[in-house]
Length: 284
Image (tube, rainbow, N blue to C red; front, side):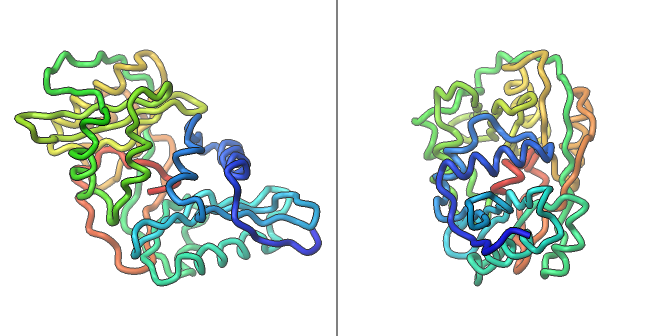
């Protein structure tokens, strides 16, 4: 067993280790998630290592506003599992978020452990993936996300997340990024929905995908998937949104993975019927 393990805050470079471990777990992170994730809360990432600096376990405990936090990247290196290194960094992260409602997306194998720590299931998220052969619609209401739209997107997004996440959102919807693109659907100056697609290690993930109606979600899905026609697309749908499940299946995507959205503390009442794709499993 490693001697004198310690826990410290990650540097930006350390977060690359966590993302690499997530890739090894099959979680398929985005190719350029690192900077957006780290800048959302630079003090929200932790690493446990031995006296020689060998990483043993990692976790993120990202803070939003003053009342909410989200746990992600909870991984212990396979060679050091069963030795308490995961539990130690878990306790550190939960202490870091003390006094807040805490959310996470838990894989099946860990859900019982999360319940023992006071978390309760809110709903399942179903990961769909496949190769949708669709074209981006020629709909005049579609606009590529840009700086001029950001105030409207920020205000629209507020209904779908329990605390302000402007720093994350500004970076996530940044125009001109080489591996990430977004669209908004706008009618008479009103946002009817928006979505973002980004390059991952395997294919492309759509997230978020928020829309007022199933028809609006369909247009946005085709707009995003049409940008990468013929390539694998991933969409993480909250199971209570039946129209979201139907959307994924309509375009040939198949269920491949699931998590449970769980909370410790008062759970937010989010409009799941308008959430067709969650933003990320790592940051909520």
